[in-house]
Length: 262
Figure 1 (cartoon, rainbow, N blue to C red):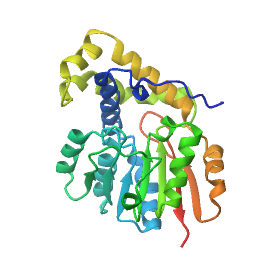
Figure 2: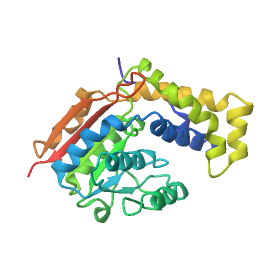
Figure 3: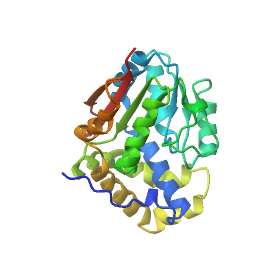
Figure 4: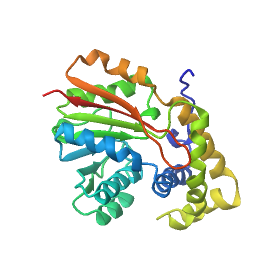
């Protein structure tokens, strides 16, 4: 299926902030409640071990769900998780501060905006980089810039994961945990609860927007061939690995990572 970069409400500055927050917050809880990142722990731990990194720069961290979930899953597996440093062009310091308090010494954040395509040298050097459920938000040129920047910025490696491969049918397994997560979000959200309740309970707006954004995301995801084509100009300085895993409900997420050759 050809990649199509249709618009998402979550990407659009003109969409109400409460609506964009609803999509991000509900997705974070969906990932947690559906145990959708549990299968990613093995590949991610292998990536961290190969890079030798003790710190990971989390790009496009959103509400911080993926970093917190991975940290918790790794700890439950009896291992020590790396220190996650969360960043985003539209940071969520309030949500991140709560996650930092819940995971002391394991999660921290940069409170100001950070452009994933232009990481400051002092921030990126020595840290592995991770982009979870976010690379599809970028058009090919910018996605390539993120991967290239990770490779040229002194990072020991970059890890990318998406919640599905390119097919609208791959979004269906998200409904099992996604619908409850969306329904209770106005109660659990730290701010703008009344406005989020309006979108979620009194109108079908939140459900329609979340469904649209999810389906569009499946059309935006990059294939293995496209990802490998993006990093091909970088030469053989990195070793690249692609794979898939599963989660309850029949999901099929994918991951792609590169490790600097020593």
